[in-house]
Image (tube, rainbow, N blue to C red; front, side):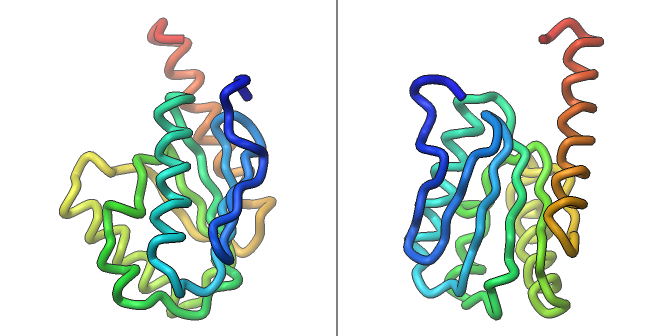
Length: 146
């Protein structure tokens, strides 16, 4: 991380985000009771993406039981332009809601088109993110953009 990087762990109400590499973040969400906390956390992710040039994010939803409509309606405000996004711990209902938010965001903001997937555990999600990270690095090297 660069000297101006944010602290390793940042808290937003019941939620937190930690950076395990300059461009890898793990966000842990709990019950969505405060939309402002969710927006503030994703603003930090958006700033990390801008600063580092890429952002691979694991979102742990295991502490979430429902997503209120006011949070779902924020759409693109809470979906930064990730390079890859892995969801962990989402039950069936939450997967349906998350898929709905992702599809609506893509339809309303076509530039927000990036790979995302659902996983049962952090290890599988982080491995998937690293695969996307290495693929992006290989592309950058092959095109001389690195």
